[in-house]
Every structure is written in structure tokens, then in C-alpha cells.
Length: 244
Image (cartoon, rainbow, N blue to C red; front, side):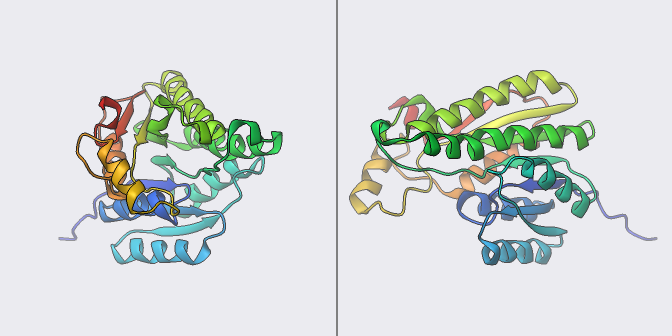
């Protein structure tokens, strides 16, 4: 008797070539998902993730797109669905994280942040919702900093707050067919400019007294995709930092 291969869920991870996005894409591949890995300019890193997912037995595709450009979000989602034969999970992870005091922010700075961090996820969500069958899910990667208000990252945190609001609005709009949730990481991957003292300070601000790992965020994404009675929620992965 021929053994039937279990059906694999098909996922698109934006910004899936590096940092947290890479961990999410690899975790999904390891959990039996087929994965489309979106990248902006990191073609080599995206190819590595693609190869790793294939080695785990899944179908994979590395797809380039500049999501700050109008129309690219919808095109990316359609390409991903074509490559994978459909789409069951969208992870909106791609984002930029510019630093600057509020008085230094220009109109161009503001528009660049919102184009990638808020506008692109919305149109990715809308395109994915049009392609998914019942049981599909969307996970947006927000940031626990929206609760804290860091003065050096005002446009970034405003864009992530917008993403949280979109998560709740779209969960209501598309229920019960599609679930929409968010993960809000805390101190996980700190800026590369941080030294030992800053790492220690970030760890001290958490209840668990450590900086998180990208895999902690990836595990939260997997949980939300596999939790059929959870929608419209924001799952904080911050080591309890909000309580300190």
C-alpha cells in the first residue's frame, strides 16, 4: 500500500532571509511547512534558507520584492501562492527600524517607515485573504515597544502600533474564515551597535533576566498558526519585560 503524504501547510514569510524572519522560516520548514521566503536585497541569505527548507523535505521558494513600492505586496503574495500551490499562512515580518530623535525625522523618513512596516502588511494581508481557504491564518510581527514609547524610534513604534490595530480590525473583518493575530517581541535581537553593558541592561529589564532568541518568536508564530480558537490577539514574547 502506498503511504499517503500528510498535507503540508504553505507559508509566506516576509523578510524571511535574516534575523527573526530567518528563524521563523526555518522553524516552519522544520515543522513540516512549505515556505516562500521573501527578501529585499539579501539574495544569498534567502537562498540559504530556501536550501535548508528543501533539505527538511519541504517545498521552498526565495522571492524578491521591494515591499515599499505600491503594488509589490499583492504581486508577492500571488507569486508565493503560485510557487507553493496555495497559501495557508502569512507572516508579516519585514520592517525597518531607523533611529532618530523626533525633531530629526523628515517626511521622507516617516513615509518610508510606514510604507514597509504598515502599508505593505495591510496589502499582503488583503491579497492573502483573497487566496486562502477557510482555516488560513495571518501572523503580524509587532513590537512590545508600542507599550513603552522609545523616543528614538517614534515612527517605527507608530507603524507597529498601526499594525496591532490592523490585526484586530482584520480579525473581525475576516472571521471565522481566517484568523489574524500578532506576536510582539521584546528584547530578542538587539541592535548590532549594542555592547556588553547594553545587553546586560536589556536582560535586567525582563523578569526572566535574559535576552530572548529569534527561536522564541518563531515558536510563538507556530503556536498562533496552530491555535484554532485564537484570533485578534497580540502575544507578547518579552520575558515579562512589560511587568517590570
